[in-house]
Image: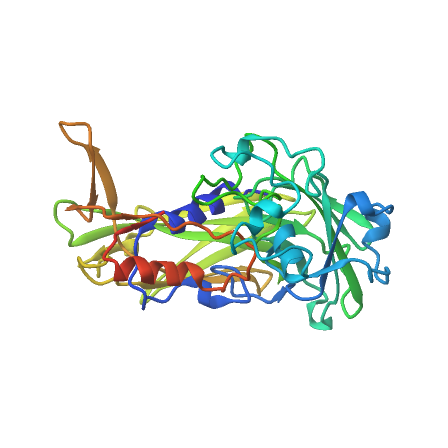
Length: 409
């Protein structure tokens, strides 16, 4: 399983030259993930949550349907531990007055970086917390490969599905990573299922969420399931993280060489032969692929191999206030045995971003060969004690656009 590539794609969204707020984006493809075209079952409602210090059972018992959770706290994802506790009226709204400083565990000096401190001994967030949900898997998911996908956890977790451990905290770790687990053998279609996640808070120096004195870190250090969780169905081969890279014939911009990259994961215990097919408007291509048992492979398709990926007079993507944000559709599918195993649809812009240092050591950016003055704007992720609208990144891009800013970070 590879997560680095998707992390880089997500980071590019968070620190990119601002989009026109009217530009469509992959976030609109909810309830699936960016680029996904297959069936996806979103797990947002019906979660409960409890500190491990108050739970005597372990993963095998907690992840079996039918557990009595009447004394657990209800939660709706995405949600940190503190977020759910505030909504359950355990703590007062930390955005009001000095309420944040009254929450247990908020003992760090106001002018210090709490991310670099250990949790106080009496903090209720020093221990791991369990998230748990039960759901009925639709029968039409039978016969598919089923992936349990986590778009964001903080910081480490043990994962249990229907009484069996699916992942441990030594591998299931990292706030900025995305995870896909093959749970085909654990999920029962047409029946009640249970997922239990034991989440551990970040430790000092972990690469997690950090804040400063004007935006203090909550006492749980944003521990929890802070992005969506879903079950996704594919054939034996899953397709992930499609991307298109551009090389222009600078200083001219009348020719673009495109390179397509996508990750394929074979969940089968035997080799799989198939064909990767793609289309960009009137440009189509196909490439034969052989995957070894349980292999994950990054496949590239470039203009040297497929000359039609040399685009003449392309419609270029430009930053806001410089030009329009022209987008092209990329549709991919992987076929094996005469059936589509997985497919994806994304929109991409043909652009080339470069940077150099001037004589004073200042970094100068160029987009499509044109120097761009970067006007910066910091988008501070709010403490997740309130529900985050699904299109917040788009709204932030719209705000940056209205302020005539070209960089949101």
